[in-house]
Length: 495
Image 1 (cartoon, one colour):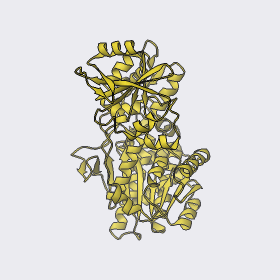
Image 2: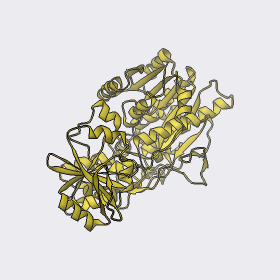
Image 3: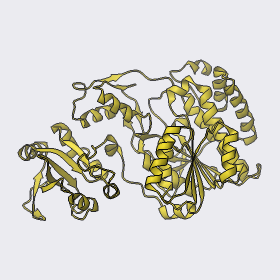
Image 4: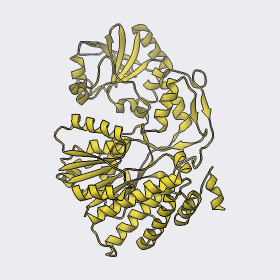
């Protein structure tokens, strides 16, 4: 492993990259063509050597002390990493050296970004906490997915959201006949439309404003475009808000899903892929329970179709995963805002933990699950090692070159209504079956009778439309008996 030192406008930087890849990196080659930097040399972490690479000296350090000495002698102000894998590999060594020495850490843009001119080399992006928490890139069968989706009409609901928009970006690479973007958020839809027009000028896509709760609008879209694949990402997702607004959670997450599922069956959609959440497992809040109800509806409908008990051919697949790094309203953007204001960083509880994956990683797994799913399945993703949110806060403070509790306070505010200390995915051998992808498991869950579920969901939705909050939650608990409220006014319904 080596680091390369360069100088720009009297500011010296070190570029980190694995030794066998530095000289041949296309991104490095493009970057070196600019007049902004002058290469000074290389550095290896480990044993000293007297070799030279391309006529440049190779420096070696073995610990924090030697790193500090080199930084002081050469006047180094920043480290430039060539990709996120390099950052991850050095997250407990070189990254820590930089944090303690308050040396900035920058990321080299990708080849596409450099060629497209979308990144200013004079203002390289800083290393983010996502680059430290992210895992090795997941390998999925892109060719088989392209073979299945190529030439198809695909629809994404919640297309302007964090997950939906990334799904659209990835879907644009599979040679679709047409991509339908469906969302009710006007400005985010306008933003993703401009991005797709710029990045994928040859892709045929149609942005449509609409609400999944409005059956007539949903049906009009199916009638016009007859999507063969539907990725249903539209949902209300914020736990405290839905705890305060349970009827809206039911109206959007349950009835909205029902509308999409029913129209998929009516208009002959081949596959319907629902985006769910780990909060649907043994839910302690309204949001998680509403997503579990949506899971139950689509799975029971799918089973009824497969058994010939309900007309249709649509195969329903549910994908369930945890928090995604940097999604709208998530903890990391919130911490960044608080850091920019000088703190404090607010954490609800010292012991609260969460599972994280990157948005692109989550979407790749959704696509893989869509390809492997035959119908009726609930797929659970391997979320890796859980992260303690208090540790995440401390790390973000350190990445900013500051000292936790000295420069920036971490303030504990108490668990919010419906919030768990930890989330459950049921990704255990006792509750899941393996698949061909080691990152995806098939959850074993209780099956429901579709006729019974359809009847009681209709009753639940009517209660929600009438805004009968307490009765709405009471019926939710009757359908999902494992729904036990925590830190919530609805705990009285569990007694």
